[in-house]
Image 1 (cartoon, rainbow, N blue to C red):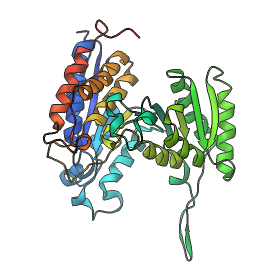
Image 2 (spheres, rainbow, N blue to C red):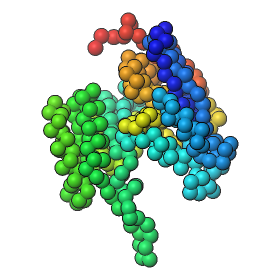
Image 3 (tube, one colour):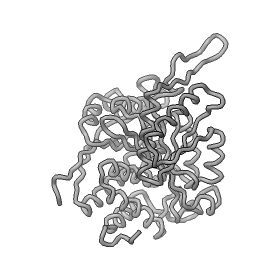
Length: 365
């Protein structure tokens, strides 16, 4: 093994099913690392409810320091019913927000891909979702979630959507750069026919596009985009969105593969990248070995993409497909099976197939 290629990961398993699914992601990372000549060292730290119980804070300073000193952060999930009565900065979910702020990440990447073996698991017709492979690039730190002023008045409430030129420019660059790695097509989603801030969004994105003449740009209003995601998801390559629209559209697209347990995410642009499954802590199935680790494993693939270990990342995606094609189904994907694959059984299958997928035996494109 080439010892010069080693990566230190801050492992934040979190709450609920987080420890179970991220443990399988680490298993797969170790397998592909051995096959592709690099090593991954993961050190565990607390966040969310687990950190609250142990330290009295959902994002302890020790976890913050470790994350900032790592090469990447792999997160499971935060929250659960036992912390439902906590409020304010003591909520487990506040630990996640503090983590994102500490890392300085502003671009949320959510790929949505429907494996051929799962086209029958989608609520849409197989012929409609088969071949779907799109990437949402969602601005993560601006928009209506963070605009001021906001709050309650005597007779109502107010939230303000705000974006600066710089915020729009930097997320647009991320989308165009990611498109260059894919099919070179960007769809920017806004509501420029109604919202002044969306008018600015469209103007700035169009201006940034001048720097990427090799990438095609089109604009869609968000209501039309929602319809198109369901009607023909295969038309999209990279979808560039603001914070609110990205939240809604990416959750809508999450229905395409048939389970939230299949969808990974990456938050990048800061000092250290954050990689986590889209799903929550699922406390109702925690500890039962029933959780689907696919999203966590694919988040590990995104992590390797950021390191430049693209061959190993592709091997992980192949491992997922191969495990599914050989009949492995966790409970969310096999409701009618008497004995669905457990979290660990599925993770071992992915690790085995991924490790065997090397450049020597990979099919020729």
